[in-house]
Image (cartoon, rainbow, N blue to C red; front, side):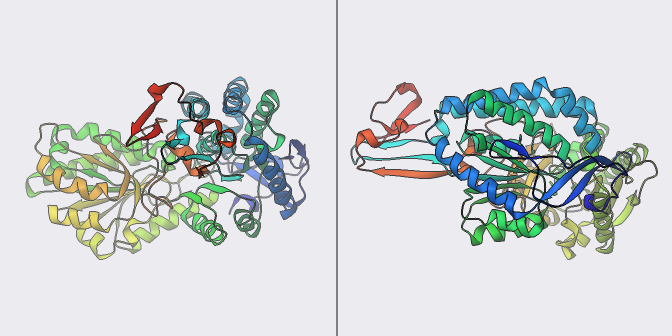
Length: 539
């Protein structure tokens, strides 16, 4: 059962308004849907519209006009909007957090109020700083040849938010939104149907900031839902500059085809099993500590993080076999004893169960869990599965499928050769982690396998679980396909993430008075520029 199939309550309020061209108005809807309270398994009362193409068309027309206006607006004004929006979110935090908790069953504290909401406002403020400072534009001045270039806004950006982060990755407040706005683009946000009311409340604060700072009315627009056909039509429309998407591989790949047929860049974050490797020396030193860290990471948010460890590779030598078995027994015990938390939806629980069954069909052995858990709402027993390296190597495609939720596969590995073979067969991932002995006992193995893992992941970690994604300029929240659609870009980490939503403009022999201010001959604040082979480069 998905969101659209949940029976509507008896008393249904009027469908929520969409935000188009500076006006909250009724949608031209082909139907409505209801979000759910996943902790109770009940539909929520507020109805939200499924927009017809006419709403998308109006949003695109308005965004095209706004994009032209934004190109002539000072970066400081765009920065002021992002800062005002962050402040507005903080002022309305109680109502926004309450709505998100109701729609996702994620805990108010610490998850939503103390972690995700501050992360979101911090992200917006980092984007403001980057917009004001402009180094993301990477201006280059070849004064001898009179050729200059810089990155500039690409045009209207469509952002599809995911189900699992109602603030930090939301289409109207998350990292893609912040990066697109910082680059000077208007955003058309498509809400996720699992938390539309949260998105509405965020959208209200965003539009309030638009009015406070005098940006074009269509700088931020919001549509709650569209049919699959209209979603594909939207990303393929010639008025679109670029697309940001976080979600399932299946949906992402369909959008990718539509966008690429139209020649639009589309940045997809889709699928990752985030392998974590435990070498024997690490287990010998701190087995109990690592079992606790692993359990906490695997079950955080009911395993519904894009960086949740879905694949554990445990090296088991003859000398370390008892240590390995004790470690896995402790993990299994922790999984079975910890109460399962609600998943985001009934559809998500079904997909999780189908994934667990598929792993078992491919040869994995069920250690604990593997069934629907009792209690209110959409719960699934914390699940641990196990396979051998031989089984993995025989069915590498089937045993490295992503299972989004509180289920993890352990593969025991007997030799370094088996481990190397497995790493060579891995698909692209967001993260990869190696736990090794602090004494240096595992260093030879580490030095052999780290280069192999490095090629398969966007972020390589040592002795640290991958579930935390810091908002840092150095962060890479990306990776080789199918983790993302492009290994050279990140959805977290400003200013790097901004250039996804920019195009490179070159000016050859253009008269000085016609150049953008950032490409004028005057080098203001020389300490921020470098002279490389006669060419000035900022940053």
